[in-house]
Length: 292
Image (tube, rainbow, N blue to C red; front, side, top):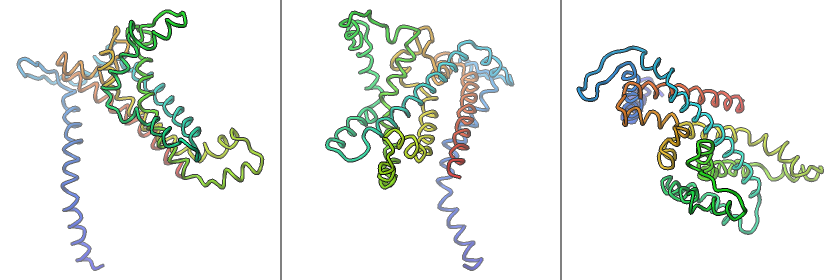
Protein backbone atom coordinates (compact mmCIF):
# COMPACT_ATOMS: atom_id res chain seq x y z
CA UNK A 1 0.00 0.00 0.00
CA UNK A 2 1.40 3.41 -1.00
CA UNK A 3 1.88 6.15 1.59
CA UNK A 4 -0.90 8.26 0.06
CA UNK A 5 -3.33 5.36 0.13
CA UNK A 6 -2.29 4.50 3.69
CA UNK A 7 -2.94 8.08 4.84
CA UNK A 8 -6.36 8.04 3.17
CA UNK A 9 -7.18 4.71 4.78
CA UNK A 10 -6.12 5.97 8.24
CA UNK A 11 -8.12 9.17 7.79
CA UNK A 12 -11.20 7.19 6.86
CA UNK A 13 -10.68 4.95 9.91
CA UNK A 14 -10.42 7.92 12.28
CA UNK A 15 -13.48 9.59 10.76
CA UNK A 16 -15.53 6.43 11.31
CA UNK A 17 -14.14 5.92 14.80
CA UNK A 18 -14.46 9.55 15.98
CA UNK A 19 -18.22 9.58 16.76
CA UNK A 20 -17.96 6.45 18.93
CA UNK A 21 -14.90 7.87 20.70
CA UNK A 22 -16.65 11.19 21.37
CA UNK A 23 -19.68 9.35 22.72
CA UNK A 24 -17.53 7.23 25.05
CA UNK A 25 -15.68 10.32 26.29
CA UNK A 26 -18.95 12.13 26.89
CA UNK A 27 -20.49 9.22 28.80
CA UNK A 28 -17.40 8.30 30.84
CA UNK A 29 -14.61 10.87 30.92
CA UNK A 30 -16.86 13.90 31.39
CA UNK A 31 -18.86 12.46 34.33
CA UNK A 32 -15.67 11.19 35.98
CA UNK A 33 -14.02 14.57 35.60
CA UNK A 34 -17.09 16.32 36.98
CA UNK A 35 -17.26 14.05 40.04
CA UNK A 36 -13.53 14.50 40.70
CA UNK A 37 -13.91 18.28 40.40
CA UNK A 38 -16.96 18.40 42.68
CA UNK A 39 -15.22 16.35 45.38
CA UNK A 40 -13.05 19.38 46.22
CA UNK A 41 -16.00 21.72 46.85
CA UNK A 42 -18.68 22.27 49.46
CA UNK A 43 -22.11 23.07 48.06
CA UNK A 44 -24.98 25.08 49.50
CA UNK A 45 -27.99 23.47 47.89
CA UNK A 46 -30.33 26.36 48.73
CA UNK A 47 -28.22 29.22 47.39
CA UNK A 48 -26.31 27.21 44.79
CA UNK A 49 -22.99 28.59 46.07
CA UNK A 50 -19.92 26.38 46.25
CA UNK A 51 -16.64 26.87 48.07
CA UNK A 52 -13.32 25.24 47.35
CA UNK A 53 -12.26 23.25 50.42
CA UNK A 54 -9.50 21.06 48.98
CA UNK A 55 -9.31 17.60 50.54
CA UNK A 56 -11.66 18.38 53.42
CA UNK A 57 -14.41 16.15 52.02
CA UNK A 58 -11.99 13.22 51.87
CA UNK A 59 -10.74 13.90 55.40
CA UNK A 60 -14.28 14.07 56.79
CA UNK A 61 -15.26 10.88 55.01
CA UNK A 62 -12.20 9.04 56.34
CA UNK A 63 -13.34 9.85 59.87
CA UNK A 64 -17.02 9.18 59.23
CA UNK A 65 -18.08 6.08 61.14
CA UNK A 66 -21.02 5.52 58.79
CA UNK A 67 -18.71 5.54 55.75
CA UNK A 68 -16.38 3.08 57.48
CA UNK A 69 -19.29 0.78 58.27
CA UNK A 70 -20.58 1.06 54.71
CA UNK A 71 -17.13 0.14 53.42
CA UNK A 72 -16.95 -2.91 55.72
CA UNK A 73 -20.45 -4.01 54.73
CA UNK A 74 -19.51 -3.71 51.06
CA UNK A 75 -16.38 -5.80 51.56
CA UNK A 76 -18.31 -8.50 53.45
CA UNK A 77 -21.04 -8.60 50.83
CA UNK A 78 -18.56 -8.67 47.93
CA UNK A 79 -16.45 -11.46 49.43
CA UNK A 80 -19.24 -13.84 50.43
CA UNK A 81 -21.51 -13.18 47.44
CA UNK A 82 -18.83 -13.44 44.74
CA UNK A 83 -17.03 -16.46 46.24
CA UNK A 84 -20.21 -18.43 46.91
CA UNK A 85 -21.71 -17.60 43.52
CA UNK A 86 -18.61 -18.90 41.78
CA UNK A 87 -18.49 -21.98 44.02
CA UNK A 88 -22.12 -22.92 43.41
CA UNK A 89 -21.80 -22.07 39.71
CA UNK A 90 -18.85 -24.45 39.36
CA UNK A 91 -20.68 -27.11 41.38
CA UNK A 92 -23.79 -26.89 39.19
CA UNK A 93 -21.70 -26.98 36.02
CA UNK A 94 -20.03 -30.20 37.24
CA UNK A 95 -23.36 -31.76 38.17
CA UNK A 96 -24.89 -30.97 34.78
CA UNK A 97 -21.87 -31.94 32.69
CA UNK A 98 -22.44 -34.47 29.96
CA UNK A 99 -25.56 -35.56 28.10
CA UNK A 100 -28.54 -36.91 29.96
CA UNK A 101 -32.30 -36.75 29.83
CA UNK A 102 -33.73 -33.56 31.31
CA UNK A 103 -30.51 -31.53 31.08
CA UNK A 104 -32.12 -28.73 29.06
CA UNK A 105 -35.02 -28.44 31.47
CA UNK A 106 -32.65 -28.39 34.45
CA UNK A 107 -30.51 -25.70 32.81
CA UNK A 108 -33.58 -23.55 32.11
CA UNK A 109 -34.68 -23.83 35.75
CA UNK A 110 -31.20 -22.85 36.95
CA UNK A 111 -30.88 -19.74 34.78
CA UNK A 112 -34.47 -18.60 35.46
CA UNK A 113 -33.59 -16.30 38.44
CA UNK A 114 -31.08 -14.40 36.31
CA UNK A 115 -33.67 -13.26 33.77
CA UNK A 116 -36.12 -11.84 36.33
CA UNK A 117 -36.10 -8.15 37.24
CA UNK A 118 -34.23 -7.41 40.47
CA UNK A 119 -37.19 -5.50 41.89
CA UNK A 120 -39.47 -8.49 41.27
CA UNK A 121 -36.94 -10.79 42.93
CA UNK A 122 -36.74 -8.49 45.95
CA UNK A 123 -40.53 -8.38 46.23
CA UNK A 124 -40.71 -12.18 46.22
CA UNK A 125 -37.93 -12.56 48.77
CA UNK A 126 -39.52 -9.97 51.04
CA UNK A 127 -42.48 -12.33 51.25
CA UNK A 128 -40.16 -15.26 51.95
CA UNK A 129 -38.44 -13.24 54.71
CA UNK A 130 -41.65 -11.85 56.27
CA UNK A 131 -41.67 -12.38 60.03
CA UNK A 132 -45.32 -13.46 60.29
CA UNK A 133 -46.27 -15.03 56.94
CA UNK A 134 -42.88 -15.73 55.39
CA UNK A 135 -41.97 -19.16 54.08
CA UNK A 136 -38.74 -19.42 56.06
CA UNK A 137 -40.31 -18.61 59.41
CA UNK A 138 -43.21 -20.92 58.60
CA UNK A 139 -40.71 -23.78 58.20
CA UNK A 140 -38.91 -22.79 61.41
CA UNK A 141 -42.15 -22.76 63.40
CA UNK A 142 -43.12 -26.19 62.07
CA UNK A 143 -39.86 -27.72 63.21
CA UNK A 144 -40.17 -26.18 66.67
CA UNK A 145 -37.78 -23.22 66.26
CA UNK A 146 -38.30 -19.53 66.90
CA UNK A 147 -38.96 -17.24 63.90
CA UNK A 148 -36.14 -15.01 62.73
CA UNK A 149 -36.15 -11.36 61.70
CA UNK A 150 -34.33 -11.99 58.45
CA UNK A 151 -34.37 -8.33 57.37
CA UNK A 152 -34.81 -6.70 60.79
CA UNK A 153 -32.06 -8.39 62.80
CA UNK A 154 -28.78 -6.44 62.57
CA UNK A 155 -26.75 -9.64 62.83
CA UNK A 156 -28.19 -11.42 59.80
CA UNK A 157 -29.85 -8.76 57.59
CA UNK A 158 -26.77 -8.32 55.39
CA UNK A 159 -26.40 -12.09 54.96
CA UNK A 160 -30.08 -12.32 54.00
CA UNK A 161 -29.37 -9.91 51.13
CA UNK A 162 -26.30 -11.95 50.21
CA UNK A 163 -28.53 -15.01 49.89
CA UNK A 164 -30.81 -13.16 47.47
CA UNK A 165 -27.84 -12.12 45.34
CA UNK A 166 -26.49 -15.68 45.31
CA UNK A 167 -29.87 -17.00 44.16
CA UNK A 168 -30.06 -14.43 41.36
CA UNK A 169 -26.50 -14.49 39.99
CA UNK A 170 -25.23 -18.03 40.52
CA UNK A 171 -26.80 -18.89 37.11
CA UNK A 172 -24.47 -16.35 35.50
CA UNK A 173 -21.37 -18.11 36.81
CA UNK A 174 -22.94 -21.47 35.92
CA UNK A 175 -23.34 -20.46 32.27
CA UNK A 176 -19.74 -19.28 31.92
CA UNK A 177 -18.25 -22.33 33.63
CA UNK A 178 -20.50 -24.67 31.67
CA UNK A 179 -19.35 -23.04 28.42
CA UNK A 180 -15.74 -23.54 29.49
CA UNK A 181 -16.35 -27.20 30.32
CA UNK A 182 -17.99 -27.84 26.96
CA UNK A 183 -14.75 -26.76 25.26
CA UNK A 184 -12.67 -29.42 27.04
CA UNK A 185 -12.00 -32.42 24.75
CA UNK A 186 -13.93 -35.43 26.00
CA UNK A 187 -10.95 -37.65 25.17
CA UNK A 188 -9.08 -36.21 28.18
CA UNK A 189 -11.70 -37.56 30.57
CA UNK A 190 -11.82 -40.91 28.79
CA UNK A 191 -8.04 -41.28 29.02
CA UNK A 192 -8.11 -40.42 32.72
CA UNK A 193 -10.88 -42.97 33.37
CA UNK A 194 -8.92 -45.66 31.51
CA UNK A 195 -5.93 -44.89 33.74
CA UNK A 196 -8.14 -45.49 36.77
CA UNK A 197 -8.72 -41.91 37.90
CA UNK A 198 -11.84 -41.26 39.98
CA UNK A 199 -14.27 -38.42 39.33
CA UNK A 200 -12.85 -36.30 42.14
CA UNK A 201 -9.31 -36.83 40.84
CA UNK A 202 -10.37 -35.89 37.30
CA UNK A 203 -12.05 -32.74 38.58
CA UNK A 204 -9.06 -31.74 40.70
CA UNK A 205 -6.25 -32.55 38.25
CA UNK A 206 -7.84 -31.95 34.84
CA UNK A 207 -11.06 -29.95 34.87
CA UNK A 208 -10.31 -27.26 37.45
CA UNK A 209 -6.82 -26.41 36.11
CA UNK A 210 -8.21 -26.04 32.58
CA UNK A 211 -11.08 -23.89 33.85
CA UNK A 212 -8.86 -21.67 36.00
CA UNK A 213 -9.03 -18.76 33.53
CA UNK A 214 -12.83 -18.92 33.27
CA UNK A 215 -13.16 -19.18 37.05
CA UNK A 216 -10.90 -16.18 37.59
CA UNK A 217 -12.77 -14.21 34.93
CA UNK A 218 -16.20 -14.87 36.40
CA UNK A 219 -14.87 -14.15 39.90
CA UNK A 220 -13.63 -10.77 38.66
CA UNK A 221 -16.96 -9.96 37.03
CA UNK A 222 -18.96 -10.87 40.10
CA UNK A 223 -16.58 -9.06 42.46
CA UNK A 224 -16.82 -5.82 40.50
CA UNK A 225 -20.59 -6.14 40.20
CA UNK A 226 -21.29 -6.96 43.85
CA UNK A 227 -19.06 -4.11 45.02
CA UNK A 228 -21.51 -1.58 43.56
CA UNK A 229 -24.54 -3.15 45.27
CA UNK A 230 -27.44 -0.72 45.60
CA UNK A 231 -30.75 -2.06 44.27
CA UNK A 232 -31.25 -4.95 46.70
CA UNK A 233 -30.37 -2.80 49.71
CA UNK A 234 -32.77 -0.09 48.54
CA UNK A 235 -35.60 -2.54 47.93
CA UNK A 236 -35.18 -4.90 50.88
CA UNK A 237 -33.90 -2.90 53.87
CA UNK A 238 -33.28 0.72 52.90
CA UNK A 239 -29.87 0.43 54.56
CA UNK A 240 -31.30 -0.71 57.91
CA UNK A 241 -31.69 -1.93 60.48
CA UNK A 242 -29.42 0.63 62.17
CA UNK A 243 -27.31 0.97 58.97
CA UNK A 244 -26.28 -2.69 59.22
CA UNK A 245 -26.86 -3.23 55.48
CA UNK A 246 -25.74 0.14 54.16
CA UNK A 247 -23.17 -0.17 51.37
CA UNK A 248 -20.93 2.36 49.66
CA UNK A 249 -23.35 2.89 46.79
CA UNK A 250 -26.22 3.47 49.21
CA UNK A 251 -24.05 5.81 51.29
CA UNK A 252 -23.27 7.87 48.18
CA UNK A 253 -26.96 7.94 47.24
CA UNK A 254 -28.01 9.18 50.68
CA UNK A 255 -25.29 11.81 50.91
CA UNK A 256 -26.07 13.16 47.46
CA UNK A 257 -29.85 12.86 47.12
CA UNK A 258 -31.14 12.74 50.71
CA UNK A 259 -28.78 15.14 52.48
CA UNK A 260 -27.62 17.05 49.36
CA UNK A 261 -23.96 16.82 50.38
CA UNK A 262 -22.84 16.67 46.75
CA UNK A 263 -19.18 17.32 47.54
CA UNK A 264 -19.02 14.53 50.09
CA UNK A 265 -20.96 12.18 47.82
CA UNK A 266 -18.50 12.96 45.00
CA UNK A 267 -15.53 12.27 47.26
CA UNK A 268 -17.03 8.94 48.33
CA UNK A 269 -17.60 8.11 44.66
CA UNK A 270 -13.95 8.83 43.83
CA UNK A 271 -12.75 6.62 46.69
CA UNK A 272 -15.04 3.82 45.52
CA UNK A 273 -13.83 4.24 41.93
CA UNK A 274 -10.18 3.93 42.91
CA UNK A 275 -10.83 0.86 45.03
CA UNK A 276 -12.78 -0.83 42.22
CA UNK A 277 -9.99 0.09 39.78
CA UNK A 278 -7.49 -1.52 42.17
CA UNK A 279 -9.55 -4.72 42.27
CA UNK A 280 -9.88 -4.73 38.48
CA UNK A 281 -6.12 -4.31 38.03
CA UNK A 282 -5.45 -7.13 40.49
CA UNK A 283 -7.71 -9.53 38.58
CA UNK A 284 -6.45 -8.41 35.16
CA UNK A 285 -2.85 -9.06 36.18
CA UNK A 286 -3.79 -12.54 37.33
CA UNK A 287 -5.71 -13.18 34.11
CA UNK A 288 -2.76 -12.07 31.99
CA UNK A 289 -0.48 -14.40 33.95
CA UNK A 290 -2.91 -17.25 33.33
CA UNK A 291 -2.78 -16.55 29.59
CA UNK A 292 1.02 -16.61 29.63
